[in-house]
Length: 324
Image 1: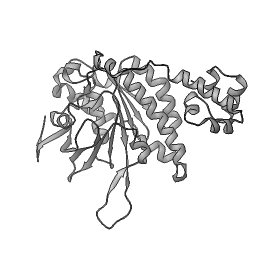
Image 2 (image 1 turned 30 degrees about the vertical axis):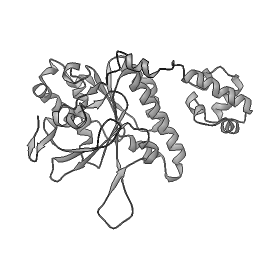
Image 3 (image 1 turned 135 degrees about the vertical axis):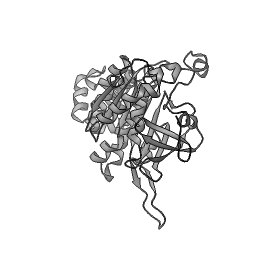
Image 4 (image 1 turned 90 degrees about the horizontal axis):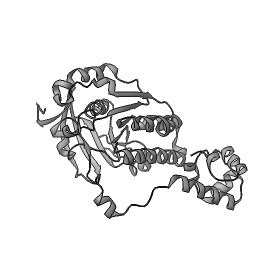
């Protein structure tokens, strides 16, 4: 909520706006002395503003472990990748709650896997889908329409359970070029879309925005914005059982004389916020790739080969043998 909507003195709300503290989340990320200093208001006024912000943001009733266990929604829903082998190392697919990061170098099939998930989310629940649509948020490149059309043409043959669904009609595309624009999109447009049946949110990619707007000396500001975006995504995912996929780029690990090593971009601030990390790498040739689970509380580290062809992404049962 914007500070002008909080139950505080209007003069203090104006001072907060002038200091660049636009909404309740901005206030909650700062200490009371810092709010007081930035807005040039008393500590008492800053404390009252933070209290009003907390009242708005944290209105949900506390939930006990027993409540969660007895809830009819306590079962863990997953979204199939559309391939039995890939689902195998992911224990069914992508978890419906939380943020799954797909990270890798350029041309490692990150977008290919995201496009396939945008198709499989449309499958009925009994077939591993979520019987919904997808929103695909592009931050650096134009949406790959031709590839989406190719997958749509082959989807019904690969997954007969798709029925008469018009695949491309259920993939909504948004383009966003700034961090502020992404936050606005996630807090205003996407929640409306989720209420109307979107059951998968894809951001391709999260790193492109932050690399373009923040330098080495902006680590604290970058971490603050990352927290806002991740918190928004996690609340959305948890409330609506909607998987969130964030594509990330890689950075070179500097130092040493050995082979080239890469690590996920955005550093530890981002790594601490994702729930599952899947690493894609080229494995030689134009089509061969590997998919590795490198971070997940519910999965052991694992790796499997995969291949991209006209019908999508497929796990490799054995070298040179493509799984259905």
